[in-house]
Length: 260
Image (tube, rainbow, N blue to C red; front, top):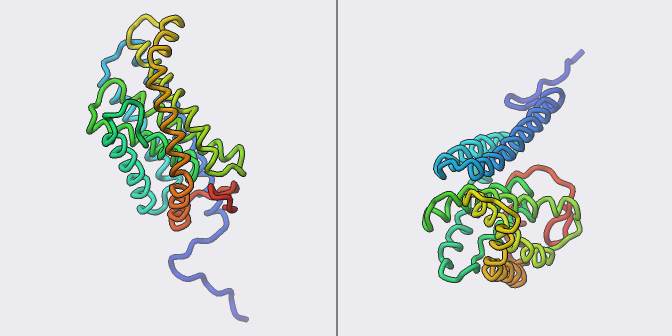
């Protein structure tokens, strides 16, 4: 009697190994999430306790690097995907640096939101954090860098979560969402300014928000304008690249209204 044919050399069985790989991936995603929360805790503690900005930035970058490594092991199975994320962050960084002369007007926030909206919260968070680092190479690093990493990372992640919660949303959702993040980003950066002053009070915080309302409004209007003018073609390009690259499986619809 003929025995069962052996699988070709190099193939992987689809039994316990697959389940073990899925469990390991979930563990890595959990560790990456914990490290991401630790980054936020370090940023707030550094501002509250008056740590030197470089100490806060170093601690945040180390935790962020650990989170990025765990994310890489859990999600990125192809170097092309990492290169794609780096390219998106570079485009956002260059766009911000090129338009620095216009207060509040730059395409970085829109590109970060579009990345998360199309490619998921993990990718959006990575593009946001790397954009803060990359753009500040041109504009100057400082105590604001970890806070920008946290703010833009949260912006990109929230765009991905938005699609997870409401899968039928299309690119038009980026218009009001980008407008809202113009203010949210400014309010988060105001928190850094407040904690750095050493005398945090609600009155002082509200005064900072009033003082920055013009800048935040320009940021919000610019985000909405970029989304209205370039939202559909930008997400169309992201979708084409997403289909060519390995991505975590998801059940929500694509940004152009197609099933993923």
